[in-house]
Image (tube, rainbow, N blue to C red; front, side, top):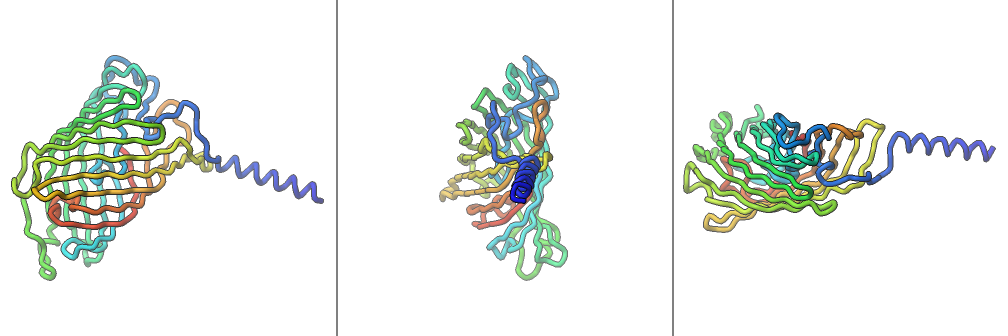
Length: 309
């Protein structure tokens, strides 16, 4: 009887292992493959038109990263909102990749754009608070553990109509906010750690007195090699990141964004890497990342789903 019971336990344990693989680190793994930009072996050569994806890993904690998302945020500003639904639709299309002798390496040029909006969940009609429209031409590169991005881009921001019609509390003064900026970032992968740094220079600002002329940008991310396979349909990896932006206008203001959670991918990516989606908790403090409110100091906490382009 004891032997039969032991055999049953062994069978249950074996089945459990088959359904949910333990944390493992796969051989030949690197940071680029973990973030989904390693590329299939077929996509290599001196010149490759219309490649898949990008060679620069998307930034996890940057509030202005080009990604689609849907999340909830708790704010502390009465002139913004205390319960915010933040959503974004964004994607990137690549024109070509050159000098890609190794899958995932090379120099790449594309076009990227997105619309990011925030809604007041406590209002009767879920008033639109702010909408940011962005379009840019990212020039990216990767050579092994080093990667970077040079991106000229345009952003315009607009207050929501319902928000403008509020009487109590009165809405902030509307600003015809738009700018053009050139961003440069350099990134290095160190085992499970990624560090990056750079900045932006604003070449066009409207209004001039409302925006700084430059900012510094740096951050770090952690994507461990270990992952968890679940039911043969997904691979889950814990991720964490912090992103910092500093502006002087003339008072120095620092925005800090931190995110932590789980990133999901396809379980087998031998040929073609899958897009990632993540469930992330987030915290932000500093100048508002939302265009029409950027002069406000905010503190936001929340949770959201994020999807890489």
